Length: 114
Length: 111
Image (cartoon, chains in turn purple, red):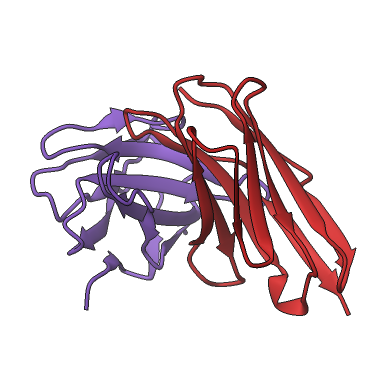
């Protein structure tokens, strides 16, 4: 079954701790994205990656880090430097331009800082 | 980077009426404009998209228009039904595949 999978669905973190959100896709997509969704603010781009071993900052990258060591995986680390990390995080992937460019989303991870 | 603005933030329509959502973008290099629908508790899903070489695209009750000169694009839903109630997001993608979204429009269809 092809798709994009995020885990875990719910995550609790203590203040001052780093936490890593997983995103895996088996769609053979080159591009992957991380978004943060807060009520009334839509989907804000954190990081994106066009190809393996390369990624770019989005609009709200501060306090986050990513890696793209494999085409299938694009984990997001929420560091202790992120001032307000409680949010819903969505991962997405898409094909390169010139092909079907539809972005598919994972089911999301809801992160709560306690 | 790209900046996408979306209006209105909320929209309430009577069942059977039309709904229109408008977006603007800032990067003239953007060439792909998808629209996503997100139902409560679910992931966003693509409902229609348009590329910069096309001015209008229609799929049953949904249509999208694009004005490249003005950097505007719009979503039109005709004959709205209760199941159209959701949050709708516009987005713009540039050749570097930076995919940026608007803030969303919460559409409520009144029976």
